[in-house]
Length: 411
Image 1 (cartoon, rainbow, N blue to C red):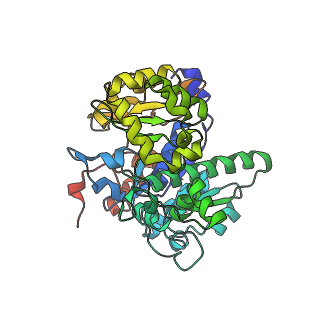
Image 2 (cartoon, helix red, strand yellow; image 1 turned 120 degrees about the vertical axis):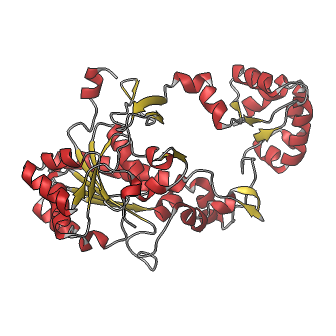
């Protein structure tokens, strides 16, 4: 990224106080750092963000933590000491945005009552992520990604059949909740530019999971029909799914009748397009099993890589099913420059995925490696205009800590 592009980062000059842990909140604040915001991640002195102890590990580094904490500064602090809460309040009143994902009400217990903070600083934006929302019988219940996947219906439509359902292979609801709350924060910042007032924005894992139900949720609301898993087939389009070839399975996604006719030509059976069972999209979906068998018989004539090249050249959406080694070897993935190389505070190298956005045609930078726990404690306190003597006193009393290894934490 050039200096001029970096200066144009849309959230440059915005300070975010990040009190969130695990995944949804930290992913949101990682997206904000991509856009230029300065994010101060405040962590408990007793081990920090819980994901620091989650595998997989590279030496002593949690790669789970590393994946969503790029670009941030870390302050290690005792959340429940009077001095620690005083520092938190000072940080909150100097920030533009406060992000948290405690249970509803916990923020107030920590001396950070949202109404009180915003009365003192009307422009403050407070963003919250919870498991089930701020109202209702489960508002105080703990919620994690797979719980939301199950309760939202997502797992009920993911799998081979109704007897074999699966969670999505990444914590997709956490990630979506992070995207939604980041969008809410950006919207609140835009609103503040017009009227000077901050606001409180919130979402939950359950709300986020319901929001992405797309046509499947609408299907039930409008028709009463309960969707069921379709395996690797699209629930309403055909041919659209995974198909066997001479060697490997490939994905073919026919979205309209024109593509359907092109496909039939390319596989060597143009008459297939006009057979009564397959003329329209609805016909093809009703006779999906028979159509799949016909197509796979034709696709057996060539290796999957040849079919992919042939179909792509014709404009038919298609592609392989990669493992992650193959993903990062793909020329298109490499051309997107998604992998950046940074250096952690301890000097160890870390290849890291950048955020998915570009500004003026340039992929967003990773401004800083994921921080060591307490790695920026002194710098953050200096930013609060504390003297060296005051900082030394806080360190000595255990209210804050500088960078240390997890083994140093008393159990």
